[in-house]
Image (cartoon, rainbow, N blue to C red):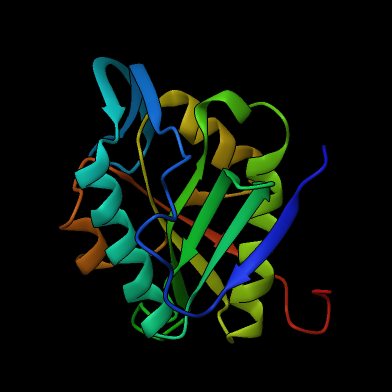
Length: 184
């Protein structure tokens, strides 16, 4: 695939998501029981972004950038294939986490390894910012969880209240980052 990877650390424009197609139809999700174990259950919903939602996402991405974070964008020409947003503000009782607030691949581009590249780029950016772990409030869809599981994510050891309260049905996951010496 002929694409470019951009690490954006300056505020992004309001047209950033114009070519992006966010659509996910979910039929099964993961939930966490009282003992902390994951289980599947039937749940149907559609997540699709209109222009207003895209503007809301852009504001959140700019919020991340303003706090020392980064937006990773993968583009082919002027078309946005996928993006990830990393908040630069440390979280957790020991400041061990940086929040991976968004990682999305445009609907027509899924299954091409773009999500993995985005995840790897975000991990590198998080290591450069001194994080020990990524924190992810993940959509509980089975497909989404399987992506994070394939990347090596696990159920978070610590729940970050400010992330959890925004989307209490999301799966609270974490990823242990390589040390700066081994990350390259």
